[in-house]
Length: 308
Ligand code: ING
Ligand code: ZN
Image (cartoon, rainbow, N blue to C red; front, side):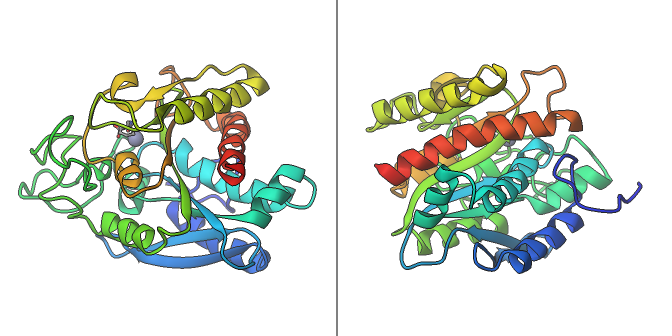
């Protein structure tokens, strides 16, 4: 394993570099960025969240998380890109200026830190966290099956060796507790929730745990349609979109449904590039185009939330 000199937005960064980067961003842009710890992982690593936006009174908030699944490396790369672009273009981009003046983005650059570290050191294809389970041969809970959203009912496994093991109970995992308690404490201001996965090029919204459409399905569908149009305007990358259960597959315990049922009515999950040629092992040369196009979709969603 070789250590690279420095953090880079066009490369995949190890966890140590990402932590150092969060600290640097808060120091370098004190008027726009601050860092808070929301909890600790199973292996006791601090979970840092970046608050991005102009400090001024009570503002709407959009919560975004990346890297809930360890091997989906393009996802944390996007969260880092988003923060950099936000602060870099704040003064020159009208839309970003308006967004950061009028709302805050709360960004968790890596949700599943222990798993992410594991993909760098032991197993590039690891998905779950690294918690011990009832089977000592099979550690790890799928964090996107551990939320209290019809937990343990569909599209999950109760077997620790499964990739979609939902854990012994809802919110059993420290990473989930950290995120759900933080969001609950800030519910009155949080107006949007966006989670980033890879891969498949899909923009999804609730529900995942049932086939029924969400009460505001028409609105979600319209925003998603416009967001993927914005995304594809740059390089022609094609995205599909729709309710999770019928667009990809049904499953319970996801962050998307949990956030929605807590009352965050603008809830989305991206499956970033690609369509399977490289899958989780997306080459570093694709980071820049993937992040640039995804910015357009996220800015569209954010602007919709701001003006609605
Ligand atoms: N896909 C997601 C998963 O957790 C998903 C799909 C998104 C399910 C939103 C539920 C809600 O299975 C990947 N690639 O992990
Ligand atoms: Zn995933």
